[in-house]
Length: 131
Image (cartoon, rainbow, N blue to C red; front, side, top):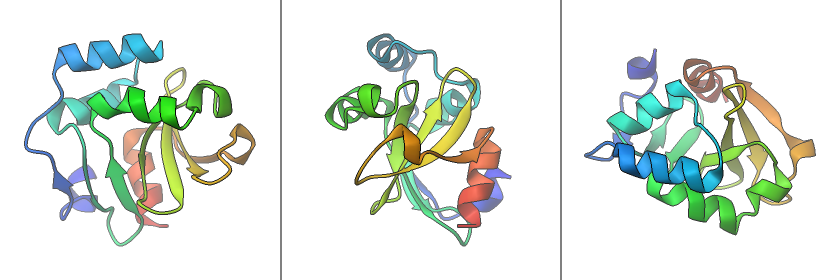
C-alpha cells in the first residue's frame, strides 16, 4: 500500500542510522514502533502528498528530539512522539506504547484534541490519503 499512496513522495536520499535512532529513543525515553522504524531506516524523512489526500512532512530522526522539546510534547501530549506535520495546521504523532498514530492541531496542542489516525503505518497512510 505504501508505494501506491506515496508514489510522488520526495524521500531523503538516505536512511537513518541505528546510532541516530538509538540516540533519539534514549533522549525521548521510548522505543519507537517497528513499522515507523522500518520507514525511517529506509528513508529518514521526506515530504509530499499521500495519495490524493493530506500532505505529510515526515521529520528526520535527528530532528525528533529537538522538535518534540520545542513543541513541549512530553507535557502537552504525554506518551506521544511527534513525527511530522502537514506543513500547515496539523502535527502527526505516534504512540510508542501501542503503535497508534494520531493527528493534533499545531495551535493549541493538547492531548484532549487527539484524533486517532491509524493503528499502523499502513493504516495511517490510508487515513491521510482520504483526508
